Image 1 (cartoon, rainbow, N blue to C red):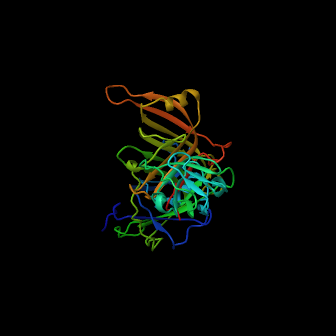
Image 2 (tube, helix red, strand yellow; image 1 turned 135 degrees about the horizontal axis):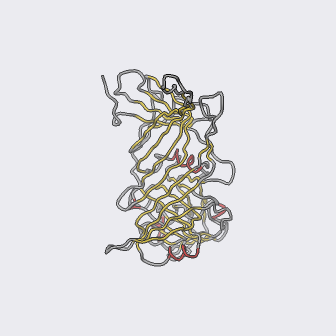
Image 3 (tube, helix red, strand yellow; image 1 turned 90 degrees about the horizontal axis):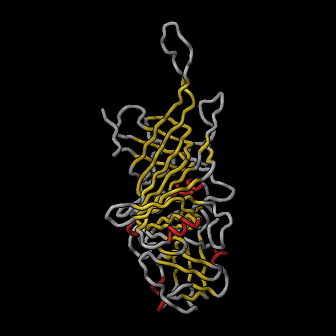
Length: 405
């Protein structure tokens, strides 16, 4: 008789076409994970009757849900099927300028200036990570290098690099193309994405019936990202499933293998606040709560749907006490845009996952005591950026994944 082990368990998932329609058996992908837990819970309906034998009357079972939780290091492309569901917004079309011959590169800001056309119209936004190709001679080092946009107008881009490498100056005339690698998604102001998924847990080492568990009509209800020094960018996602079934055969019989893409490390990350690279941050986390609502109904053992009522993003930013940047913003209630790309290697064109909060406000400030380096800790709440300045994402949050398909 075999005993189930997490090491041998295969967890796969696939996006459903609609609520109430379990995903088809083909086209699923194995899920990279540090942990994945899934449990089916049924509410208890107590029977309050008083019995003459002084024993408690038997309860009944009510409506049931599956409580699912995934956690693990973030790697580009590996969890891209989750990020749009988390922010309730579909991935945007790939951003590109097309070939341009009127762009001048400069070593000082603004770094890339075009004579005509508009970066903003092309789809570029503050906080995005971009790359360019086509530079020749003295501008070659600008090719295939990650830049993060720290300021933007219709004709000008100011950028920073993770390693501080300067932009190589070059006159216009080269045929250059700018792109925002991969795709990005954000919480829209309308037309929200209601994404339901099917998860399959296959335990091949269990040699009795019921070794396959399928959770479907599952929806992300919240989660977090966490970045600490000398660690990985890690994420945890909370999900609720409305349907559950067991079997003795693997439901997703041929899921694609897990990717081998390196994970994103905090040692190759970047934190930008209001257009300035913060080189003294000691940690940041992002907590997302979608305020799920599941209305109970009579004559049913299953909740009809899960409504993501509102995206709420809060978190904590920690930084060595180096200057008064964050305290001044805290005291004046000044909004700050926070952008945090994390790369999966030190290379100039390393792949990445980029988290953007165009509008945040600090709500507390405290510091540690003792003889060690002084670290100030700020709590923040992200806002909708509804009246956004030109060139920013009008949203509470966006995620850019360089390997999102």
